[in-house]
Image (cartoon, rainbow, N blue to C red):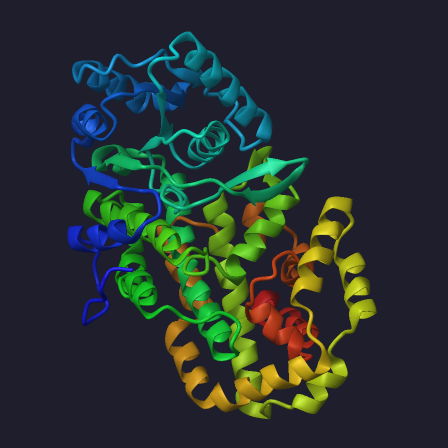
Length: 466
């Protein structure tokens, strides 16, 4: 990791990007600027002069940016191959059959020109990037991406979120070598896509709180440099939702760079911990269950944004409960479910065989023996006076987060993404089970309070009863 700066950054600037690139596993070039597409050919020619570029796009992104990039590649003397262009409608989904299609098409192009290796270039946002990312991983190729919307933080993140055997999961693959984005194109993207990116970035609030928890109880140490880089600019980046919603190029430039920095932080940290916590477990749960609303897949960022409210509401109840009643270790040990109890909770929360199997795997990996739980809660008890202050400073509360998301144009109620209140209520227990990452859901379960706190949230006067 490059040396830390004396103070946490409050804006995303070129030196900060360069710091992260110096420690990133894969990404070497990030070029985000007005008229950035005009530089695409020169950037690719400098980095990969001996490869044949091949664009992967859909009809919409091909018209929006792909044709311009193809022309710049030709102008740079790179002789790009014919583009792989998916239909624009219905919207492309992140299913593994599309990965197979890209692998097949790229393999055919490679066989037709065996003396010059390929450089795939994804032109689009989340789905196209993830499909291309996984396809090139299977072929052992580097790739570049031309982003067309500030819609998620996966551009520079390792791994791809795909539907495999009917279940949404993150599959391993490296991040792109090159990221290019034209600020004018980002600012002109559909407002729903930009709002989704805002929701994904807002999720770093609860992801940060979960990291503080995990560090305090010895599960996953906090990395100060990475913490500062992600959390330092966050209040300013999510503090201008009205400008984001209005399509301000300057605000969307910072939003996109914030998402890029988060992905780079994942590369440097070697973990998604800097970017993903309990709010993503909510999103992952509903992605695994194939959540649709009005016949359309609900965007990742919208689910993450709502998940941020879901988690922050639980945090508010938990903080008040501990500050009021303290940490009763003996009561927690008596309430903590054994292996049979965990199995009962899993079967009560899931009905899909693949999800049940996944929940068993993850829950067993993080289940504690009584002595281990006592040791963890003793650590928590000792850390609580300081930790509670840090958590309250980190978390603005569910009402404040809801207000920010509303102003950005993102949904803030379960009904807006096709969920009932009953489904939302059940999601608290189910989300705790699908990832082994330590979050507020795990702490609440270990304290014997998860079900009780969820009941309060949905009882008269509770956050979700409003």
